[in-house]
Length: 130
Image (cartoon, rainbow, N blue to C red; front, side, top):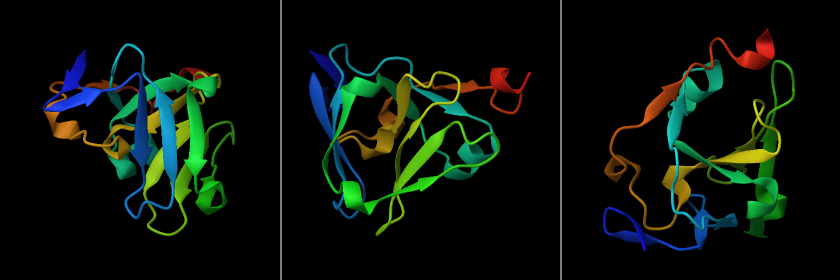
């Protein structure tokens, strides 16, 4: 059993935005692995801790029509947020387009401050910019 604080991380774990209009199902068979922050321009502003799942490891259970897309710079990464409450839920990663980065704060019952130390990735000097 994988835990974060008092929360058991289920093999398929629910995530949602603040208002509940968007719900995701995440495949996390090994729990939360390699949580990280990024210091690129958008991530600094979001301040989110993310965890990665494969593209087929995320499904939108509810609220697909509420998800809004934001892209910038190379337009490779696809950042999704709830059009009602504005919470960033996930993004298709630029450094690995076969994965989504998911906002750890959206996982049901998970307090990101219970994670412990979180690595910060160098997004200012992103490998795809070379």
